[in-house]
Length: 204
Ligand code: ITT
Image (tube, rainbow, N blue to C red; front, side):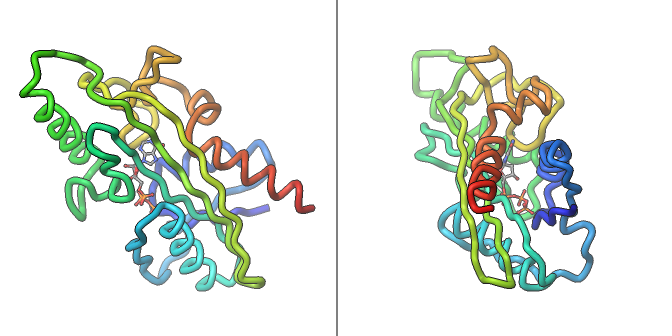
C-alpha cells in the first residue's frame, strides 16, 4: 500500500522510503502530486508546522497524509535554529549555506574564549510526525529526538541537512558518516516513526 508524505525534502523522502519499505509500504511525496496548495509553515512549534503540512496536503488530496517537521536545536544558540532550521541562512538557503551559518555563529561565540575546541556545543535533532486523516479530521502526533554535538570539522556524505556537523559520541562519527540503517536506528525521525507505528498497531 501507499503512504503519502507531505514533504519536498529529498533526504526525508529517502529515509521514509527506506524505513517503510520493510513494512511493505511505498512512499509518495509532494513531488508526485503537482498543483498542491502552498503550505505556510508559520507555526511556533514543530508540532504546529507538521499539522499544517499534513492538513494542507491531506485536505487537498482527500486521503491520509504523513508530515514531518524537524530541526536542529543548538544549546549554545539558545535552541536556534529550531523551527527555522530549513531557512536559517535565508528563504532559499541550501544545506551548505545553513551549515556555514551555523559554524560561523558558534565560532564567533568561541572567539572570546581561551579554548580551541572541536566540539562547539551540545545539540539535538527533533522530529515531529503527524498522520492526518481528512475523512475523520483526526491527527496522530509523535516526536523523537537524538542528542549530539556540533563539530567544527564536518564529515561524511550520507544523510542530508546538518548531518555532517552532528557528531555522535556513541559512534565517534557524524550523522553523515553512518549508514541509513544506522541513522534510522538512532535518529529523531526513526524514533518518531517507531512511536507512530506502535500507536497505529495499538489502535487496530
Ligand atoms: P518539508 O517541509 O517539505 O518536509 P523542509 O526541509 O522544509 O522540508 P523542515 O521544515 O522540517 O523541512 O525543516 C527541517 C530542516 O532541519 C531540514 O531542512 C534540515 O536542514 C534539518 N533537518 C531535519 N532533519 C534532519 C536530519 O535527519 N538530518 C539533518 N538535518 C535535518
